[in-house]
Length: 229
Length: 218
Image (cartoon, rainbow over all chains, first blue to last red; front, side):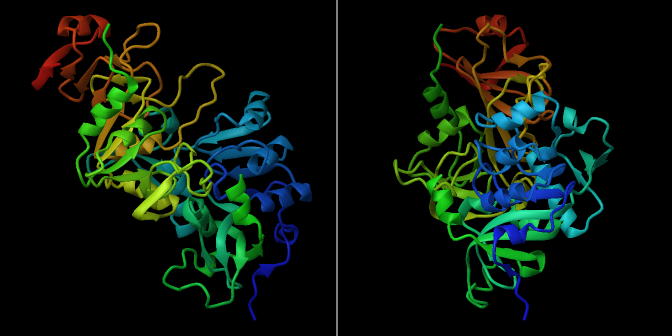
């Protein structure tokens, strides 16, 4: 019997080593798998490359990972926010490397990795600082920039419900990067509000097919936690 | 000098958004446009973080922090609205499916170049978000901004001095002193606030301005 469910967040992240590249779902705090990140911090690993839309908000999640000095490099689109003080301090102190990527290119590069594409040509960013030094090509009269896929060793994502085969459904705008990160990482770990019986998820509405997910951990408070934030 | 308030600017932009349009309102000032879209018009508001059919803010105490907009404020979903992942959201932009996006700006050039993501100052932490994708992806990119900085410098310029967001992507600029079309033909004035003349507008901006054929002095 295939059972991707694991008993705890700690067990779910137990294989993540120093120097790993880790995609973390979420747009701001919506969809951020806080309990998996807490378990990663408790595990004590560092020198991580983190891929997330932002660079931490407030004190929890990615912000805590940066505060604890575990992040060597972050690949994101929107690091600077009113509550990104831990990133701001680390960046100004030269303790964290930033690769800034236009948000749609971030999504497309993650999706390209998951889809097995060698690269993409994107019109976004052409003629800007973010395209400096990159190969360009005019295609059908439009200028494009060559961008490479973003792969990762692990993806930590948050979904609403999952089953023991790893099928996932999401909740509202907490979906954001979850489905494409699940495809792009070698090992995808999903924290879900509830693990349901096989067959309980309507196959017509499964968003992430289980083939993209290696571990599922039930964090009962996952949804409620977000509601109370 | 007579100026349009931010609410008057938002109402002015809203007048140009037709029924059935798929629209993304950028964070900050453009968000206000939603308050002035007439109830009887069905308009689809898209938010980059994965929703179409975005509704107004919920009542206090009713917030669901898994239902937010690009500015990370709590919002609601209209009946018939839906959710999707980030790659689909940006396919809507880059793929040319969005009819209109409304963005704020540091500078717009008369040819439609846009600078709105980074001041380029030493020590400034850059953040781009979805600005570059929206600017070049939507069928029409509108900018909404004060025409002058607090120091009185024109934000409508011959060439942007701030780092660019996109090239020749803006088609119309709504400001507190007038409405302009920009593009290959240069800047054309569609409307001027009451009490201001074209010559005064030329002096304030320092750029070449002509009245558009269908223009109206307010």
